Image (cartoon, rainbow, N blue to C red; front, side, top):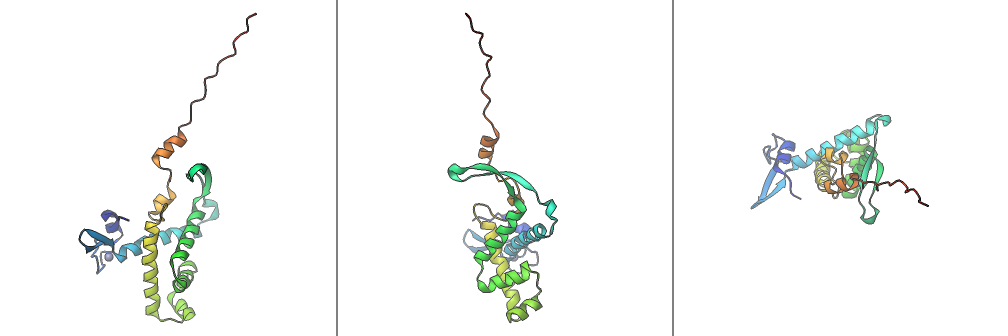
Length: 188
Ligand SMILES: [Zn+2]
């Protein structure tokens, strides 16, 4: 997947020793790769939205009407976007992490345990814990951005209208009703 320069710059850290705030790193001629600070930025943006969805009042969760394309079974239906996002965030993360990383992800990111508690529970030192956290953030940052067909990042796009323009015009342009003709008077 191609990463845009503007998006990478926006997410990059100015203090990053690898990219110096540029976001993309040249790995070979004309081939750029997002810096790890950018990947971590993607993860943190998605994680912030996840926390917002989980902690906000349930009555604020909204139901929206969306178009779903599934071959012949295309249809418009109601969805709960917040709940979908929470489920996607957890399931995609679980699928892309190994057992050890899954434990850290669950304890630290989902249950909110700090590094001391995680280290004691997993019997690891502080360095191993933070290395694992960085690794998780980088891997999931890339996955959230490159996930198909609906990436979790940018978060605004996930929660926005997913209907492609050509489909939208087809769905919203209803056929004109047939002209109603008054019955003709019968002649004897
Ligand atoms: Zn960087």
